[in-house]
Length: 391
Image 1 (cartoon, helix red, strand yellow):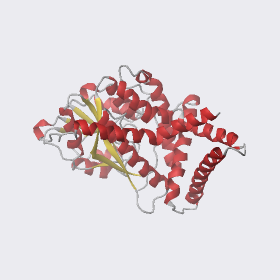
Image 2 (image 1 turned 45 degrees about the vertical axis):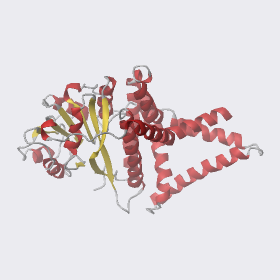
Image 3 (image 1 turned 180 degrees about the vertical axis):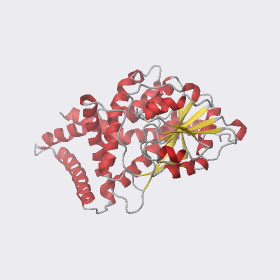
Image 4 (image 1 turned 45 degrees about the horizontal axis):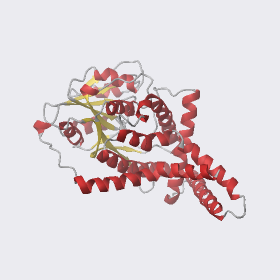
């Protein structure tokens, strides 16, 4: 029991903090020998032709702002196409988009899910690069230039932009916790990219070489992750570009955020099962390490190890002479008490920020457990209910 407890805690620590620490020191050593990366050319002649693809489902509340944001994006004249696809939308979204001749509108009344819409849109994309972004996110003006400049490097097959979550001082636990999580994720992605490759891209903003795009099965839940990882499997790198960012508001509340996290967790298990070949370190030595450390452990064993280590700690702390295990149990209990207090304060709409992190941490890991159960019992549909966002 002692050995299992220690191993469980080591894996938990490595998953959420240790891998980040390891990356940090590896990158510091790498910079000593190789220095920082050189500036990438952004001259208009060096940029590839590009198509911006936006899949919008019933987004009439956001779509005018999204269109205005898209039309303000900087890119060389004659090199950028805009494609909006609104399959299944039953509100005024298609009619609003149709008012803009600069945008190619693709619409059909049937709703088959986002990935089916993306696959259909790709039949109309004939540029060198394609950039995907969500309808409820807003890009900085230089985002496309910052992303597409990386394709001058032939080893780059995809580029992941940065996701930023907007929240103010009155933010609840869902907003503040999500914001903190994405700041930490951004740091990990920056180091992953500098070491070798980002492990997957998020749908809020990512890009691929059109020639490398590979359709994924229609039931794929995390289509953005799978599309980018299939390119990485071919030997190309996924680069992280923090100067290209998509800003969105946080989930309306913790319940809405939990709904999103459970879906992601179910999709994570699906992705792990479909990317089994990445467990073999021989063809993908660095990518395998990054993939297992950054994704697989979070999506599989770590939530179970949190429960196991807590139960084992209780058993080992019963002996009066085991002061070390008793102190460890006290620390664990204190952490979960703070998480429960965060839950109570959230219900009472009292904002105590120090409680947001343990509360959000527990919500995330509960979501993984619920997602695993959902995937193996009812299966997660690729056609999913939209998460309500703060206005």
